[in-house]
Length: 269
Image (cartoon, rainbow, N blue to C red; front, side, top):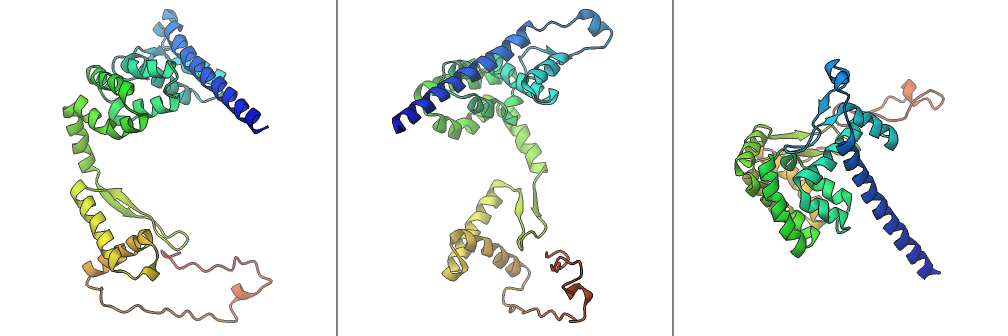
């Protein structure tokens, strides 16, 4: 019956959550108990690694190999998982308790601590953020917490946030990808004011385009071309119709010849 199906789903989900908690606790315990042979360290056979952020303990590098073998993942993936577990346990105890208590899934916790801006926080700043999370977890939904997380990261370490802004400013760019399926992808990193102005301009130009050009999203895409041609002084130029003449004797048209039947115009597709 449908009720039995729902019950089976509920039980399977409960087992999955319990198994997830047991797995993460096991990784944390393995990192705690793993011992490095001092002789191996002296002989440079095994070294110490710090996969977690500031304030987390180091681990033996072979632990990742052993864990990777158990979980059937690469040592690199295992080391990343160990680092995330150590980050949550030692840097964000509020998230750790929320996960152990079942109010958060591991993917939610990992999404937070693996953000570059968070993983780069020093131990003191991470503790400030964790205290904020501890209060929020008691009062707010997870969705609301995620919406406010960026502001809390900045407040936890304003100096580090300023450094990130400086680095990001140096990485600003706009790129137009190659033609694929008759279209190009446009992406980049912009100054906030430029991005907001550009977004507003696209919407305003899109409103002037005929509804036959598509819905608002499609007209915003068309607005990019309008702005580009206006900047180049071509906004009033008529569209041209390109006529391609094909020689009927071209061997490529022979139905018995090995040909894809596709013509490619360089840089246009």
